[in-house]
Amino acid sequence: MDLNYLSGADVEANIASLMKTPKDILKRTADVLGYTKKKKIKEIILDGMIHIRGAPV
Amino acid sequence: MKTLGRMSAAIVASTMGLGISTTVQADAVSEFYDGKTVRFYIGASPGGGYDVYMRTLVQHMGKRLPGKPNAIVVNMPGSGGVKASNYVYNVAPKDGTTVITPFWTHPLFQLIRPRGIKFDMSKMRWIGNMAALDSMVVAMGNVAKTLDDAKTKEIVVAASGKGSETYIFPQFLNRSINTKFKIVTGYRGTAKMTNAMEAGEAQARGGSWQSWNVIRPNWVGTDRISVLVQAGLAPHPDPNVKGVPMLVDVVPAEYKPIAQLLSVPVAMARIVGSPPGIPNDRLMALRKAFDATMKDPAFLADAKNARWTLTILVAQMSKPISLRS
Image (tube, rainbow over all chains, first blue to last red):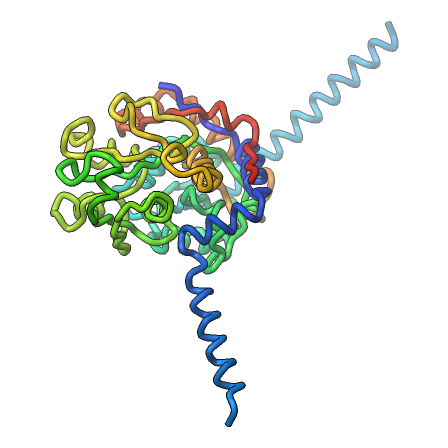
């Protein structure tokens, strides 16, 4: 059996590389996985509050 | 001759000096660890894939640490392992007595799901990586045979939290190819998800293929389960999953960069590290113990007995991988 481990230095280099992933890919990934969903709901609620606050008295 | 003699003397003195320096350093590290307890944290419950890997590692690596400290495993499940990573990064001692195997998703999540994350994996001090894995979505054999089946009927998927691969891949498939996975979160560990499948409470789960070999080895290669899709950088060499489609191949073109991004970290699926701030000499001692453990025949034999299926294209990781949109 071949274990094929990575050294600590290898791991550090690979994680540093991962951190350089283009932002558009990261954003789309977050959207697809539903990680931005709560933010959108919050925005909608916030929009509603602004509307209520700005509505004529 | 005289010059050579002087040079030789200088080299001998220098070598002796280095030797003394190294010995003093080793003694200081040994003295530090003597009588201490090194805690190896995992964000998963006992009995799952992470747990088995860590316990096998600790059993052997602990004996190789200078000063012969106690080495124990600490299970701290919760929030897809984020609870443990947050704790280790911010609260646990940073003196060399804290080690963690974070979930493979954590380096990715600090980029795409930072809410709740209080760590920076690029600042962790890494000791090494035990293995590269494949994450797969597996259904009960009488429920679905292929991904196409999952497009035509609702399949209940057991998952831990939204930070776990058990959620990520079914969710990604729902969005990219319109599968009808109904993801139920809250299960603590793949062992409990598997129990839920056996009890009929759930019909599928994500997770590493390795975990199946650990938790239900008698199901592997039988009709009890169907492997619907696999993530990773290349097809898993296990003959039991031969022909199972790769995630990157089943999604439309616009989703392929995302599939690749999700697949890359599984090649570093069992990273082992300490929080930033660990003194360098102790980090070097931990790395030395780790490296020696990975080559230790006794460790390899135990890993084999624990049904590790270690494999897959770590050679590809010898150069850092970069993604392009």
